[in-house]
Image (cartoon, rainbow, N blue to C red; front, side):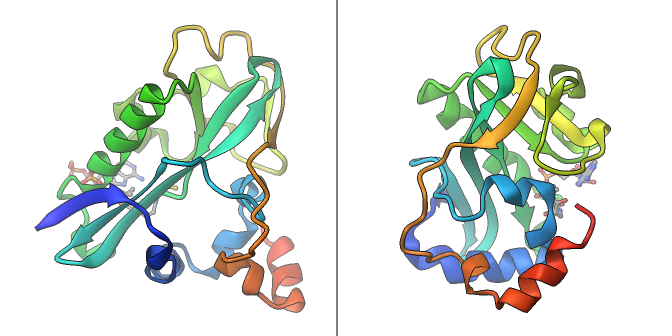
Length: 189
Ligand SMILES: CC(C)(COP(=O)(O)OP(=O)(O)OC[C@H]1O[C@@H](n2cnc3c(N)ncnc32)[C@H](O)[C@@H]1OP(=O)(O)O)[C@@H](O)C(=O)NCCC(=O)NCCS
């Protein structure tokens, strides 16, 4: 049976293996990673999906400041194991995360992804046109969602990370060798 639940520390290894499988190691060079690296995700906003105890999906949200809009969140990565796609796992992860973020009082969410997938959850590139991420990104893929009406109205300026620093360095990205990381930094986002 497929279930959605909050992520625990014991899920990190399986989650990272899933992300490597879905996105490849190049994932660490993506622009959004500049907003996540070395930070902790928002407390209470990391979810995984399991199929009979096997981790098959992940989504997390991260604290950012979004220019004049102020405090916001950035969502990602969202990933579902190849063998489990198109059965609603991605949508369940998204709806769980969006609902919980709204319950916790967050006002808006940003992400970089395909509008053809994310528009079903209300995301639009119209809300992010004058916001800048810390690296190159296709503007058509930089999307926003208002959990509170007007939260991204007229938003302009730089998006930067505000999440708590991850002092125990438990994430896999921090285990990479310096040469590996410098090669990845040169890849396009
Ligand atoms: C995107 C992803 C998370 C969706 O997970 P999922 O569990 O298959 O999603 P759902 O079951 O809720 O929805 C599946 C539907 O979305 C569609 N879909 C999947 N990716 C899509 C995309 N990039 N653009 C448009 N539609 C997409 C599927 O074709 C499917 O359509 P159907 O219902 O008509 O068959 C999954 O395909 C995935 O992990 N992809 C690779 C990683 C990725 O692109 N992540 C998002 C960007 S960070």
